[in-house]
Image 1 (cartoon, rainbow, N blue to C red):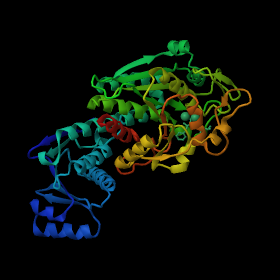
Image 2 (tube, rainbow, N blue to C red):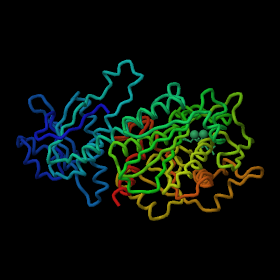
Image 3 (spheres, rainbow, N blue to C red):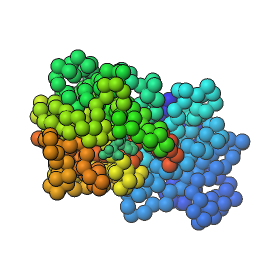
Image 4 (spheres, rainbow, N blue to C red):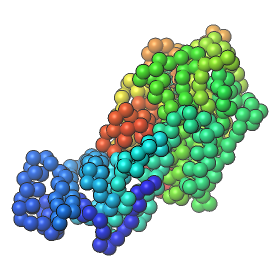
Length: 478
Ligand code: BES
Ligand code: ZN
Ligand code: ZN
């Protein structure tokens, strides 16, 4: 991450004053007219004010608090994102933040919005220097923040930057092997162990789902294992994360159309990116939980040897699948990873996948779809984390009736359901490869954005990392 955060007694840089009570204007060296102007503007719901003192900008950010702390934190993130734009306009490299209400969670949320909105993906821009966000250093006044939260801010934002970089990387620079190499580098930086199985090992294990999807590809598949195993782990059975690593989804022989569909499918490894980001954060923060991540990866293409609608595939679990649509490929490789997870006798498994357009159609870009067998107690904790960080989770049912829709005449199941309930039938398919408490997150609607929204920049978002790290931190604190 190219933005440095630090705590200082008297923070240097362009002053940023965060206040939740206008009385605090009295703490700031302002002229009477400036105070009067700010008070008047706040009445008109203008909350960020740029003042110039000796030609240098000073920012006064006012957040109007409500009873709902989750909403307050989100408003602060959004104010942070607005400030990021102003900092870019004024080409400011250093800011000094004072939060006059001294609430550290508010400081945290504001910083999160500011840093996340300042992300840029410029690897392939000739004029990257001009386009880079100018902000290099954020100094935070001592009383406004703690060292622990400073560490958390840095780790979470860096985790999200890594996930965004992974999603934004075009497929012609990111084969399955290249993805695994980057996962090794991210793991190293985050102090997480990474090992990679190549095609020979995948064949030897008999991961039929992953190999079937890979058949049309010129590039070998990979299966990456990341592990965070602190000596003081609170859990005896590991938690396993699984991320869909389809580095490009053409749909295969069931080819996708280009506009608004295949043209975005470099993002089909968004689940892998989220899982890698979570592992990076767990490692960097040394969260006391034993967590393993599994990332099956390949591209999905038509081609001479490509798997075809009508094929029957023998999966790693031994079950057979009738492939009726090669574009329902994510579940094929996730199924093998979910079966692999059994060997760890996990406490629970959580998978993240850009699995279905149906999930995106159902709830848009406002939340993730979730379903599973993890049980109401934990599902409610997950939803609570979703609300706390505003990466919301909407639960869909996994009722038996939906299982009927993936019955096959020739194999144990087929890889698509009917025309309705597509996110759920995908979930029912995955469920058949689990024998442990499990939760599935379909992030198809939130992983990739055409346009920026507040602190979610255009392109890869890293959506899901903040929710899951919040949830895992809760488990670690129990
Ligand atoms: N990668 C897609 C899902 C997707 C769609 C992700 C839009 C992000 C945005 C997935 O592999 C897919 O193609 N799913 C099919 C399943 C169908 C054939 C049952 C879909 O959703 O149309
Ligand atoms: Zn697909
Ligand atoms: Zn896909």
